[in-house]
Length: 342
Image (cartoon, rainbow, N blue to C red; front, side, top):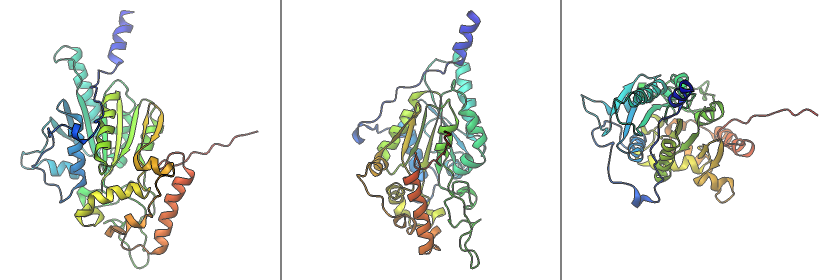
């Protein structure tokens, strides 16, 4: 019996912070834990995501950054904008790094070498380090309910750190350094975007919380992050991050493109908490018929990476988004079909 109890105490996850959602922008603390000193591009959406992530999490937080544009921008000549403990992990190590840090804290607390208190462990990665190279490690981390950790994927839809190459999150038809349109073949990239949030939700029974967010809707995004950190166990948040350099648009449009990705229905906002799906924000309004989806051209035509699109390409992209909304149970997650006999 004693052995069994000891084993159960080891398996149980350590306590989490009770981070209630902010009731309005006036309730958000002034404290900043991601400050000046980084070298991101002008109007970098990912820098805004990091700032809001840190502000939502608070000071009792450890952040791990996988190799990517946000790693390079945040570590220059022994300086960093992070006001909380921070460490670098390799491109494919977001999941392993987060689980390792969570396990280390748990062991130290169990042995009485540090105070038994909730500490947020957050690993962030780009789509290259999340949906591609780091997928195995993240998937493994999502299978361990005894460790409290959050993996946030900031998705700029390319390998932006190494010259804007195609990733599995790159949308159909986009111009990248690996899919440059030509005279013979105008559309070089023909894959539809991988949906990591859906993959984490439907394939990992230990995960209590998965969400898609857009930090153009800042308050809601911060509350999603706080919920992910409060619920316990491994959690996953997927944020779409417009990139002025990689997407070829005027930096002044960063915030607007984040909104348009949602309002056109290209980027659905949803959360899955303890197996229960909830659409929220403009996505919920679209689903209930309270808001009419904008045409995808309103989003695509503001980006130079789609400048080679003709009317036929725009119509195809629109048809794929329409199909997603008309036929899929969760917009953004490929539908499953079951043949019923008899």
